[in-house]
Amino acid sequence: MEPKRSDDGHVQEARLTEPASMQGRAPFPWPWGLVAIGVMALAWVGIYLLWNGFAFLLNW
Figure 1 (cartoon, rainbow, N blue to C red):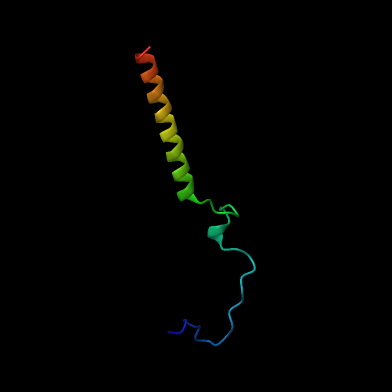
Figure 2 (figure 1 turned 180 degrees about the vertical axis):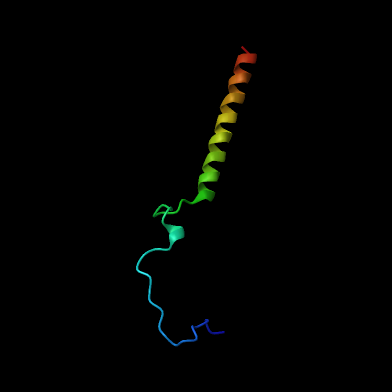
């Protein structure tokens, strides 16, 4: 398969600027999967600490 080409035979000019969809984005894309795993790990730590806190208070 060959890429589609224009019918008039002219070479298309290269864009020197980034596309309009990239203008609002950060230069470094965040690894959202790792961020989600980190948030879940912090939630588990928080739940663990709350559970042990309640267990400590009830067994006093």
